[in-house]
Amino acid sequence: SIFPLILILTIASISTMFYSGTIYNIIKDFAFLLKPILFIILGYLLMTRIKDKEFIFKAVIYIALIFAVMHLIEFITYIYENPFRIGSIRDKLKKSNVLELLGIVFIYANGKGKYFTLPFMNLSLMKFVLFSSFILYFSRTMFVTLFILVFAIKGYTKITRKGLFFMLIFVISVILFYILLYNIDISRESTGLENFLYKLKLAPSEIFYPSTNIDVENHKNLWDHWRAYEAFKAIEQLIETKYLLGVFFGKGLGSLVDLGFVAPLNEEGIQFIPNIHNGFINIMFKSGLFGLFFYFLFLIYCYLYSYRTAITERILFVNNMISGIGIYFLFTTLIVSGIYNQGDVLGIILGVFLSLNFFYIKNRNNLNENSNNRY
Image 1: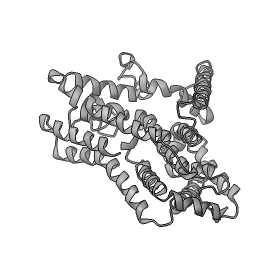
Image 2 (image 1 turned 135 degrees about the horizontal axis):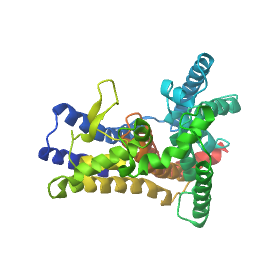
Image 3 (image 1 turned 180 degrees about the vertical axis):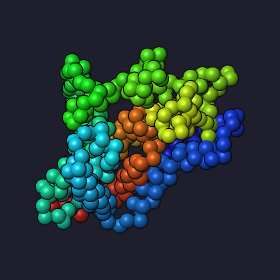
Image 4 (image 1 turned 30 degrees about the horizontal axis):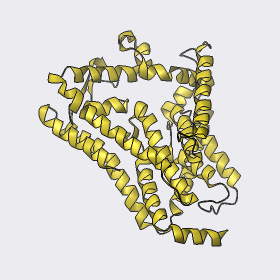
């Protein structure tokens, strides 16, 4: 499963020889592209060492609960001392927490103890704490990811009659929601819930806004469509390479995207940046269309797990989770670098579930006997 990611790193490493880059940036990019490979291997090996396979679910939920409590305390403290402004809250506090998201998903999937037992007296209180913290991140990405993983667990992301029906309902709901948003006058300077709705309204144009309409002198316009601008400049520089070699093989490790002006990203200003938000274009910038092809191959490999034969309910759950994680990476690569995102630990979780898949298939007969005895 990690072979496509290794090929991406290999192509980028070879392309490095044809372009100039500092040792620091080359090492930094090497670590950037190596991270998901190591994370998946780490998760896989970690799970092989743990005898109690239920432990990982409990560990994620309890750690998520700790993070949720800490986040709620930080939130209450901040609101007590400052006015309620979602933009300021997200700037000062954490913007998301994948472990809290996974904790919610695991509790939802577990139902009446189908996959693990929780020695916690008040499950309702645990759910309330996790959901409260989850909502107060005001994260568009986390909300969409929750839908993706829940849909995947239920099997609704597969191309079946039922899957297509629920996907159609989801798409129509999103379209109607955005029609409503675009017909509501929401100010950029708004606060509270209105500011969150403005961010939702802005989301599509952040990524796909026409580059010719972006005014770099107008910072409000530029920041509202920053992801689109970064991607445009990266593609522009690939096209300018000799014989379009950069388009096919990228500009290698250590390559920097020239923004075309000194952007006020810090106190000194930055013109050349090592990575951009759009992960697909970022992979293409480092390893070209060939690297991008292998990345899609990796995502497809993960997604197709949901179509594998599942002899037991546990195997079905694990397969659907792997598929859901693949869809999650497809979505988040468009906005926050996906599996290459520095703060994303889902690479480790993917490795864990790949290991669980192997374990449950290998021991399916024993697990069936234990399951019958348990219930």
